[in-house]
Length: 114
Image 1 (cartoon, rainbow, N blue to C red):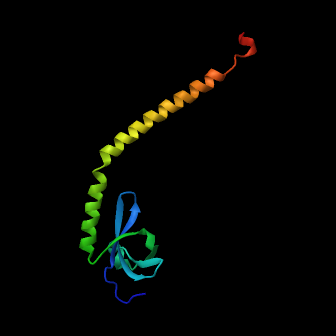
Image 2: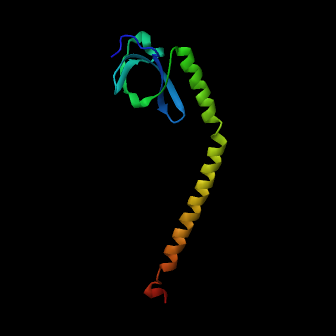
Image 3: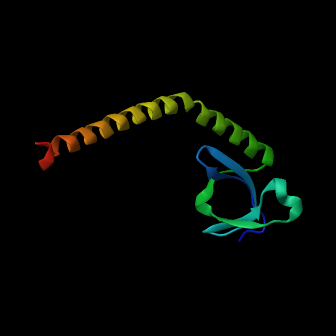
């Protein structure tokens, strides 16, 4: 592990489209250990897999600015995603109706209905 971390602020994957800023205090090939800056005073050190790191920065301000830019880029696609989801829901309704129609078409009449 390095004594001095050159770019200690990391954007970590939080969930789709969202990141959190994390301050690295120690790192290895497979994990990083540090704190979330807003909880640094509490001394809550946590460790994460290095796979969760998205980008590294020298300062917290740079990391926060990058997170804002990335969020804006993510949100710029919201309309297209909503439209695609609406098309998907419609396609699923068509599939469901076709499935039900196929089941009904193969149904044989009951003996008492003849």
